[in-house]
Length: 465
Ligand SMILES: C[S@@+](CC[C@H](N)C(=O)[O-])C[C@H]1O[C@@H](n2cnc3c(N)ncnc32)[C@H](O)[C@@H]1O
Image (cartoon, rainbow, N blue to C red; front, top):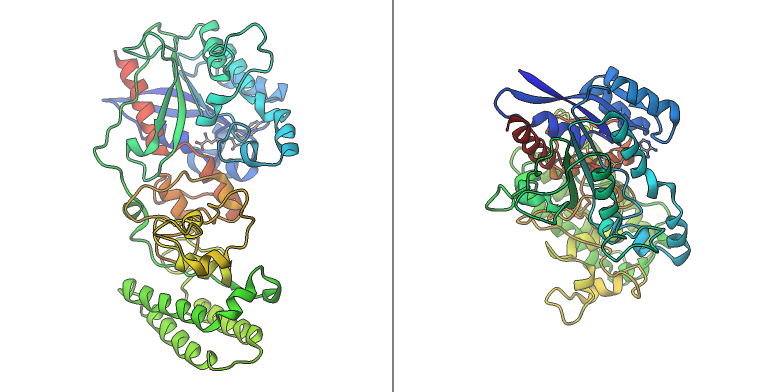
């Protein structure tokens, strides 16, 4: 079997590499010869998956690191990579942050990291190059653009020009002008909408393959994560008295307690199979709610004690247990506060906070409108509850912050790292190193392996021509 050697730059937790390793055409495959990455946890993940001798940990801007890459990769056939995209992202602070933040990001050294990618391409000159980035890069303009027209001044066009200058063909088959493609991972079997720019370039002087959707129907969230065991979060009780809008909860005390216990009962019915502990939890909480909703004084302390009893039960019954026998170590919910739990439960599946606050929407909910704790003059879509029967929204590295845009379709919590991993099409047994935040970051940053696989196969076909 012949193997094309791959150098993965900005390799992260290895999404792109994993996809390339999954591609095959007849007896042609890829091997990840080297992967360059700066981050400790991501490097640990890579070492585990591709072997420690293949991982170069370092900064791509560092001359010694660059020399090490060049010396060890003289005969690689393919360079793949996606320079960090924070400053181009449609979702990050480069778009939505304060004016000050946006100005600062303009000078962010991450803006020019892609230049180091091309320096390495230019020294190593592999037969193929694949460059991946966020769609937001399309609106990124070159800094020094006095001499250029509108199209030429787009960074993406300059990237293509740069590749052409060093001897690569970027043109896409059956087109005279197209040099990059914008693809949605959902069109390639990933249970997630994720639009990305892909440039495939080659030194053979031939047109590059067009990535054409290979699915008739999008794969939905249920297909990816619907069979996982239920996880219920621990509910934070510290500083409950100063939680924003706790007064709204206290004024609607009975209602909130009933919403909470009714939801547990529904979950116990839905997820009952193989999980009798869930039934015990639901019945115990229901009895507790009947008792404490009668008590009219000192509601805040009663609520605190109630939540602490619930937390102990969840722990004792193993309903958020990362060490449980199923060994799903990263399938564990983060903690949430009680206000958010009520918002998660009452938001309709597939809906979001901008709808529940809009009196003209079918999903309008007067109580949730009052409970919404954030400023209403900017973004109203802070909370997004996913649908079972659609692909998820783009999984973001930002999930490490609070995950409120990634609420599970029927459990009152945000997606666990393991769910994010499956929505990104990583294999079920793929392990990410580092703490929960580091895991979310590696997963959210990754090229979905299934998309990587499709790109890899397109290159193998080109090689076989
Ligand atoms: C968008 S992620 C790449 C994800 C990867 N392609 C995948 O599929 O999993 C970008 C990666 O570049 C790494 N990085 C950022 N600055 C770097 C630098 N100066 N040198 C090397 N790696 C860097 C980040 O740690 C991050 O893991």
